[in-house]
Image (cartoon, rainbow, N blue to C red; front, side):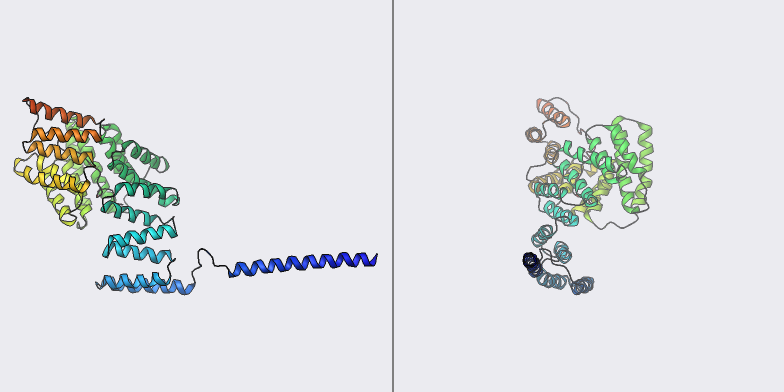
Length: 414
């Protein structure tokens, strides 16, 4: 009996020993195995901070190339350090090569797919290189990867890109979804107001503009002032379209006072001049609109939206002395060259400019190309009818409208 008991005890001891050896072996192998995401040491963090301080000093002294090289050396030593690679990408985007910036932002997303700022910066570069469909695909993939706060920014940007691509239904659904989650989102209210105004839904547009005007300005007063200015321009245009003289006078007065608040800072960026030109054009102040469109074009000569709007205003300004159809034709042709004839509004602007240059038959041919891209547009149908009547010798309106609000790549930058 004792022998049997000792035999069982020995077997139990051997089993425990084998299990202990197996556990120790797995622990040692796990310790030796390299992790997929290396843990950053305090030395790495300190080196990152030192590099950032050094590059800021170099940039402030104008040595941007040396700053890029400094970040590049850090990334070469720590290739999986996401924050450092993001800084390198931003430096390339601002001071270096767009192609290198794209490559670095794509690597940031490959390392950490939840970095919303990388998506937004990469989308801006895609738009700059005239690749809107690539930008739309990137934003759609980002919506499934980014956390809720960053996802709202991506969704807002995607909505405006879809509107620019004439996919109005998708843009409206995205904006309405944003407002269901946060009715106080000023940008979404503003863009939905523009969208409804273009669709002829004046009461809906006025409702969204009203929310923008009631938005608090304590966080970003200059930005909110610009949003309010655009909202008042939209309301002024809505009043003109419905023919309400009292509202026209009231909104114009409010617009002028709000514009003074919006201009508390000097305009430095092309997008700021473009926004201001759009609002001046919306209320019929073509002299100031042309001045700011030309300044925006001087700062960014490849912006197709600025070229389109400048061509439209030069061809259709109310004051005869401001009109220059020949110059408008050059801008319209350049705009179509940059946009590769993909935007129906740009094509329609070209048709109007041709008409203002006395080329009615060419205008009719071009407006039909616009209708192929946007077959359900009631406005394009009216334009085609107008050009056809002119060709047949019937009297037609010299100018069909005074302004078309268009969301542009310069208008929605957060």
